[in-house]
Structure formats: C-alpha cells, structure tokens
Length: 112
View (cartoon, rainbow, N blue to C red):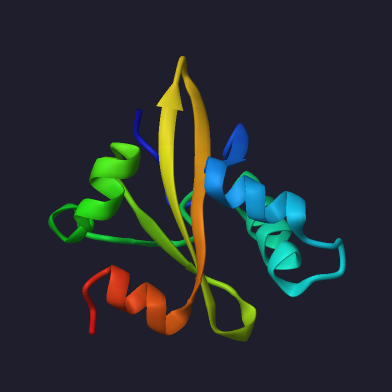
C-alpha cells in the first residue's frame, strides 16, 4: 500500500508497556496529554513523524516488536514518541511504542 505525505491512520494503539503507563497516569499529567496529542495527530496523518532509516532501526525494536519501520515524533517538553505503522487487512494502524525524553531517544536510536 502506497502512502502519500498525508495519510490518516484508521486506528492508533499503544504498546502493552506504554498502555500500562498510560492507565496509571492522571488525566492532567503531561505524559498522558502528550500520548493523547500524538494519537490525535497520527489519526490525521500517520506520516507526521520523522522516518528512521531501516538500517538504523535499533535491534531493541526489531526484536521486541518485529517492526520493519519506525518513526520518531517530536512532542512538547523534550519528549519524543516512537511509533510504527502496520497495514492489516487494508487498514492503517499506527502503534505508539514508547514516549521518551529526547536524550534517551537519541541514545536508544544510536544518534549519540
């Protein structure tokens, strides 16, 4: 399936680990607001983030989630969202795998 520069997601999900964190947060907590914001944006455009080159996808994400694409999305307050896009039965699904502080994201992605 070819995706144009603006392509909506049919669904946005959270990794099991991120879902647990999300459920434990109060509705006014910043990280929960960042996750909600990212979900809204990905429903409008799954290509909103910066695509990470396939050869630069960390083994962590390849082994843990079996991804073949990975994106980084800038959030307020120095956070970054890490997500992947799947196409399942013709439906575009974005899965947010992690929300990390900028420095941790850079280390995990091998940029520093």
